[in-house]
Image (cartoon, rainbow, N blue to C red; front, side, top):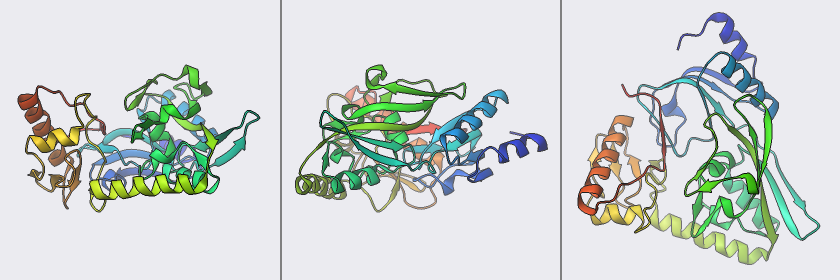
Length: 308
């Protein structure tokens, strides 16, 4: 995307954080792949998010909000538009309510791991299932992150957004429509924060649950290798990783990418992988599972941008 000098200067003054142009996404995604994005903005406040969205809409520049890019795969041809990184939005507050509930407010850039740590410290139950999930609040809410029988929808109180017109809006729990690994919001929506309704608990018991979850993740997941987490949603019949294992695909390689030998629902970058390598493995997996089991696997990771 060609940006005129005047427009580029406007964009540079939108936020007080970093502004990157023609930036290789392989430097930002957890998988370590991806071509160049035209613009990355790092707003440091919700006000700056509003300004950014308003200008991008006015100038007809496509945009997408991102966190720490742990479940994002960008095409080798890059992304034509602007990525709004919310990683500088780091405010976290805890408030006790009169009815005994505790409300935890976190901006979108707060890592889920930081929330788990805060709930252990304050003896708050409800967020233990987020232990070991590498994403941040914005992405976790957007994809209704979950594990071990619990999901974000089970603890959400409200979500703060900037809509496609660049205006702030707060959506209470009853106005939120969650689905398995998703939240029904327009693509132009930017989640800027969320409240979570928690309960006072016993600190040692909360710590024990978190420790057990982290141990289980370490045992099952290829945490020492670059990945984007679970590639496919779990079908109703069986976990995707188990199905992929049963059809004999664990260890399958394409270029620098491999279906993990430890967990079938992870694709790892062994070094030098491209997005094309990863997409080829995704296609192989979908075809094999459909041909042998009649199951259409659905994507959990988000794939954006263009192929070369």
